Image 1 (spheres, protein in one colour):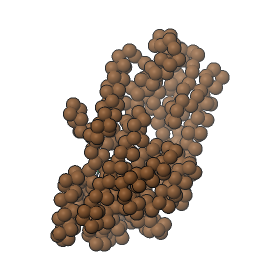
Image 2 (spheres, helix red, strand yellow):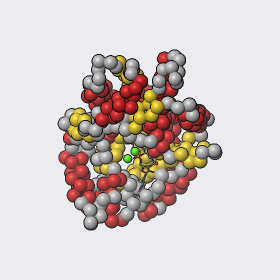
Image 3 (cartoon, helix red, strand yellow):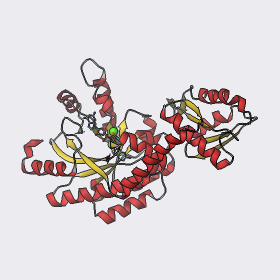
Image 4 (cartoon, protein in one colour):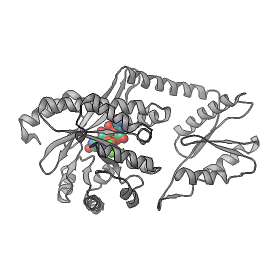
Length: 374
Ligand code: C2E
Ligand code: CA
Ligand code: CA
């Protein structure tokens, strides 16, 4: 819906002399005949994004990155022209938000860096050098660990630790995200089954799945395959998708979520409150859990109005028969407010940071043998 509205606006720009195509998911190509009007056109296109978009009664703003290459200065073939426009677009993207860049020769260097990162990530995945850490989720009614969220860690000997906030969007852009998603699902499911069997527990493991991946055909079959292969009880598997996934949702996505739930998998709506939350979406999306984003938890201090907000979110979730997890709980004061307002689950540094397999195993062992640690 958003893409349709955006393409309509772009098509309306000087439609007499341009050709305008959708290149792939969220990339569009425009062919201009008049080289002298490049700057003017780029500014006009960016201007289209000054006005808000309205999808499903919800209003929001979007931004655009534009890369430009010129025939015959930058390339002689269509392929090369597109490739160089793509390189220029990534240069525009790296400065974030509503920028345009004309291709320059040394942009290849930046492109080399990009390729290096892609190659490294690809190798890390293939050679099993990505790692998962696990952050416990705590049930506030029993003060016990009821499950854990699997979070990716990537350490490269040359580049150091690269945070998921940086490499996940990159993996989404370069097409590696689906393979990464499968790897995470497999690894986390096998690990959870192992922990549950060896310690006689029923911990539910949550895996983050990119909206791109979940919208790919065959996703449910892949999940079925991983369940069969790892032997995890699907009732102890949870998939977290971000609220952003709903922005461009389709009936197919809703259907996928329904099929996953039929398998017994729990579906959580991650980062709730940060994106395009609308009651309409919540009505349409058959989810089980709302994860309230840390941005709201952080505001639970007397001088801010956050308590009213959190309390409203918890009531909303309960009215819709959803469970609530508050993310990023760091302070006892935050915990007390959440408890008082009936939030049932929490996650955050107050209890524990995401832990390596070894540290999480120790935590389980200590919790099982010494229940008072939580
Ligand atoms: P997220 O799913 O919202 O995960 C929660 C993030 O908050 C994690 O950051 C976690 O380490 C951090 N966190 C937990 N407790 C606290 C707290 O008390 N205070 C603060 N300040 N932060 C806390 P992390 O591990 O860096 O991950 C960042 C994001 O990267 C995740 O946000 C998720 O969107 C993405 N991500 C991580 N692993 C995966 C994955 O396997 N697949 C996909 N698709 N995305 C992933
Ligand atoms: Ca998450
Ligand atoms: Ca989150």
